[in-house]
Amino acid sequence: MNNLAIEVKNINVKYKFVKSMNIKQELIKMIKRKKETRTKEVWALKNLSFSIKRGSNVGIIGSNGSGKTTLLKTIASIFQPDSGEICVHENSISLLTLGAGFQPELSGYENIYLNGLILGFTKEQIDAKREEIIEFSGIGDFIYSPIRTYSSGMKTRLAFSIACHIEPDILLIDEVLGVGDESFRQKSNEKLKELIDHDRTVIMVSHSLPALQELCDELIWIEKGVLKEYGDTETVLNHYKEYMNNLRRK
Ligand SMILES: Nc1ncnc2c1ncn2[C@@H]1O[C@H](COP(=O)(O)OP(=O)(O)OP(=O)(O)O)[C@@H](O)[C@H]1O
Image 1 (cartoon, rainbow, N blue to C red):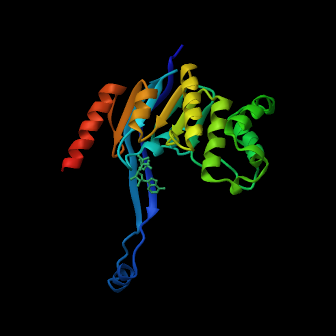
Image 2 (image 1 turned 60 degrees about the vertical axis):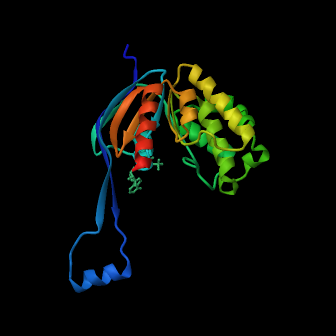
Image 3 (image 1 turned 120 degrees about the horizontal axis):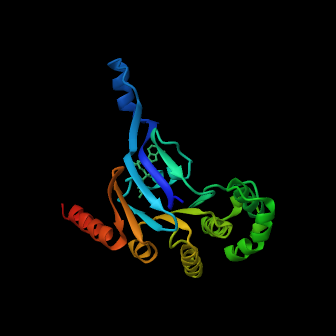
């Protein structure tokens, strides 16, 4: 049996957006009758290839704008790569990210079902986990109120609780380490460690290097959309810190 959870093969991902102009630039463009296009492209991921073993805990690091979130969203199939291929050799994959995936007009209770069903679980499976999810989130009777009335901390607690209790084969976590108040931080760290211990494949993006050091066996380091290094946590972390220190000195 293939012991790989994910294979990323030569993926390229670009964003297209319209470049905004100030009034002066608009006027100059009109006077010169320039027909220049305002559509810009950013290649967020460039020719990225790697594979992740089943059951491993991998952190993704890199400076701001290096492509970490784009990579997680592409693995979660929220974005399609412009070229290349991602093969996921597991049944369920879930992206845990701040405020994503909720329908604001529905209650927390209804969103538990919505999220679970999207992840491919049956109503009976969600029924079995529902009370645990609500209990862990600690948001009390707010569970029956629309999500739009929640604070960002409450949304994060519920999102975290759903993703951890529904227990997908692959859990992708984007920058939610260390969120919430102190008691929830401790609780969520414990829960994460429990998930990691259970042979689940976990991939997490974080700027918190101590948290990654504690939780991950391996790190993927990307810079400007390109894979810089993939290896054991200590080695990659040392090289990354050296790189960041050199940048600061310049
Ligand atoms: N919706 C978008 N439209 C245009 N460009 C985008 C969009 N989202 C991201 N980008 C660009 O793509 C690149 C990668 O962004 P991404 O958010 O994946 O980086 P990141 O490593 O997660 O950043 P950070 O550490 O700051 O959260 C950046 O240059 C960013 O400006």
